[in-house]
Image 1 (cartoon, rainbow, N blue to C red):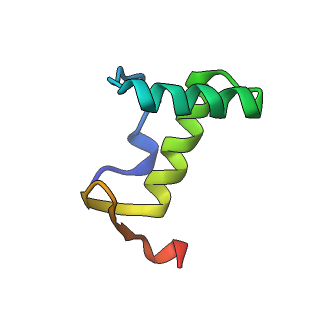
Image 2 (image 1 turned 90 degrees about the vertical axis):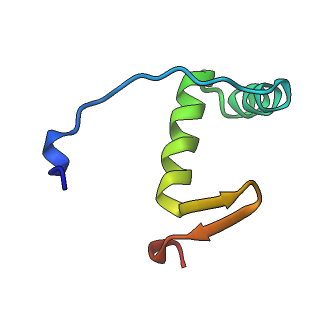
Length: 66
């Protein structure tokens, strides 16, 4: 396993459906953040909360989120 100190920040490109783009845009406007910042915060929160996704809508919550 890689030590946490070995990980660096990274950028990635994702493809969004029009509906997801709309939802992200609305969320960013509500929060006053950029879409990039909003997506970063939401992705980090989701990855800490949901350990795995079997299929869309079926989630396995991490032990920390219970």
